Image 1 (spheres, rainbow, N blue to C red):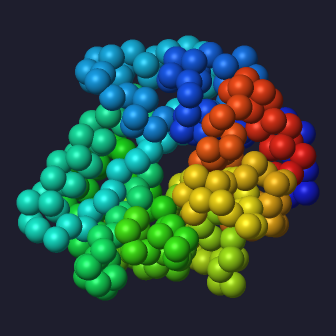
Image 2: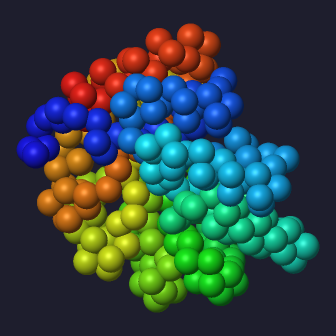
Length: 280
């Protein structure tokens, strides 16, 4: 299939956060009915569930014909105190257990940043944090996929801000259980993006591909993403680069949007499908 058109939904996945008003069960039912083939589960949808209940949710997903693409999210490793950092490690170990119970092959890592911690220190704490939970990830056969975030989040959400930095971390850690989740919202602006996508693929680390659009102006730096075709990201071009690098996984729609969350979720889902087919 050319990078200029999508004619089916066989590689469409949607994050549960995208249809924020629905429970996990509602997401599964409605995504499946719409012809969507994959789902990335956000941990909020699993809150309060035992491992057995999470495993049952995973079975429900599989029985519906959906693939569980990932669990989102782990990370947030930096902390000003050892207690803060240890708390983050415990949370990541819990995420690994949840992913294993759910049947998710990977966890998306939003790596974290803390105001007042220099970026170079935060990046060291991130590397140390991932290394600390790698034994559990390996034992559970759950991959840890670093998601670089746009530089506007460097102060408080992630000190990993380019695909190049994520690739450097993958090389530094040297484990088959560490990879990368590439999100066009965070990476589209980077002049080195095509080359770093190719590098990521050569490392065997290109685990996930997230899509949405960048609105200009943006009303909220976190919760005003657009549907594909509403903004200025060259999604088809970037998809072409990841496919040329050998990626054949899901195209995961991840939209944080107060504007879209205020709509009827079924109407929003219909627009997700149509925009995916037309603009992705």
